[in-house]
Length: 243
Image (cartoon, rainbow, N blue to C red):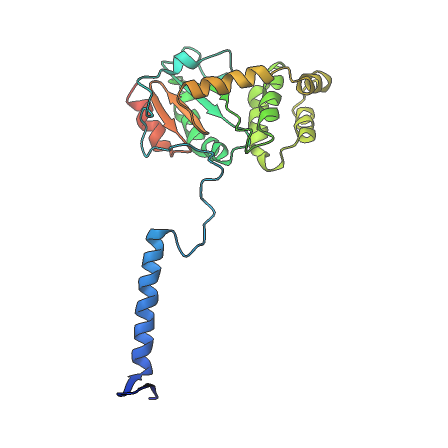
């Protein structure tokens, strides 16, 4: 087997290639382990939080710093309600139609909440708008579009459509989706173009901040805060502890 030789003034140092390979492998493995704890060597994965879309996500439900107490019923406005209005527990969802974390929450945890708690009459879900306009340019108009659809009794249909088609949000598509949902388009377009519900959306966002919301999605589950796209288990824990 060939040797690797380094000449020095005092003599020579000789290594077998197999020994050098073992040393190199050890160094690489050590660097790899270090990278796992330090975020890698300057590379980022695809799951990082972007644009400050979520503020201070806790691992488990809890009251955010500075909020002594909170109750979902205190933040119920004249917004759309899903489920039995007399349900023993209320969830208020402050959300942004263009936020990818909001879509993740809707597709996963909230879908399970609806199936296990809303449809069984244990929980009612109130949807309120919290558009992060500085990073989501279509969030405001999307929220207004859902409010305009609510005028014709199709809030939840528009709500679902917007989240389903989140990647293709545009003013023209919002109007096209109104057609597909069977809305009276002249009334819908006039409502959307006039900004009829701009102030309503702004009020929702203001209430979200008063409730301690710093990002989206933000949920008040009875008297417990669940912030961010948390797994279903977080919602289940908060719900079951209060039913």
